[in-house]
Image 1: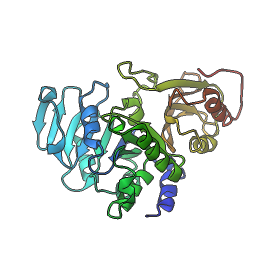
Image 2: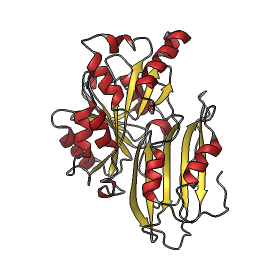
Image 3: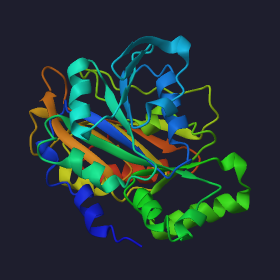
Length: 341
């Protein structure tokens, strides 16, 4: 089995986070073995009315089944959709494809890359984390889609073992897909298989790659920075809920980064603004998925009252609210008595 521990430490390191501007375009990488359900997930992102303008980059444009009624324009390997999203084919260099998309549309909220089913995410992650890429893009997260029927058999077969372990090992979030096609015993076996080897990884169970947008994608904040969305998708039967954590008084950013790496597996995403102890004149944008977090300078507080306000997306059935709040509170420099919701 491939040893990815050194590379994972590199990817999770926070010593370069201040090099990423707050307006860098967030990129979400979808990885997973052939047939796991990545393209089904892409189709959902392209078709749903989630209110975000996404560019989805794919290797095989023909595999994406976009409803013709949603298409409003086709031009040179790019399909424009009625909900503001675009689907683009990767022809050569990955970074060149990203820069081409950004030149064509300066109103995007995020980019999603569907990696090939036989691609290792290591090279992709290094491309987006390279110093020359940081002014342009921010690696928001790596999401692995795994087949509930086929894993761990795929990880035990010599021809696919290293690839499957690499795809899961580099991920911030694992979507355990097709749980409707496997019995409970099989799903328990797959879940244990992943968690025994990667205890900190977040696992989301799904049928037909049906996972809420808020769990999958971390998009850029509203330009005026005044509102943090706390919307729920009431059309799906999901255990996901969002909390709003709000505190006045400054935070130790290094302690907050470290705390995020130790949160329970049932905490999937965090997004919001932080009152920094080391730079009290500016608010800092925090975005996290799994153990990966970015905390970067955003703008001045202006006439607003400095405070930390975070939206935390969790599994509401298993997450201890008070425990998570207590961990955040421990990062405060000047604790006071205000409350989190």
